[in-house]
Length: 168
Image (tube, rainbow, N blue to C red):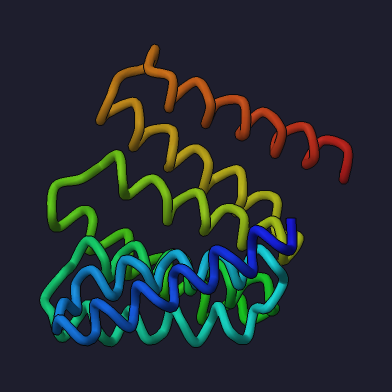
């Protein structure tokens, strides 16, 4: 697995150099997202945080709201894993607003679920239940109650409800 990560990182860095040479900043940010995800997956949260922060800055300069929202959600996940729950929440809420403003209720569910995970990490199960309820309502309105995305979210919400019942 580590060899694949090293090889993948090398290819991504070569791609970034090539895109930077071409001046293709949009695709550069897309590749940088992959590097951020790879770093986070390897537990290098400091590097992942730096990559996602850079993407937020670049995508705002490029006026790419979808990329900005995606990067904010990913950055918030890293911040939450590092214990910076308030900053994570702020990033998730901003990403949610961006998606809502762009009329994308399905994509806006990602930062809502991330808010819920942030609450779980803090041990705030009532907030987690409320967050999953909000995400489910969002999905039901967007794609319907029988959609696979809705069913998957319902299973996650049931898990949170079970954890809350066990906790007290």
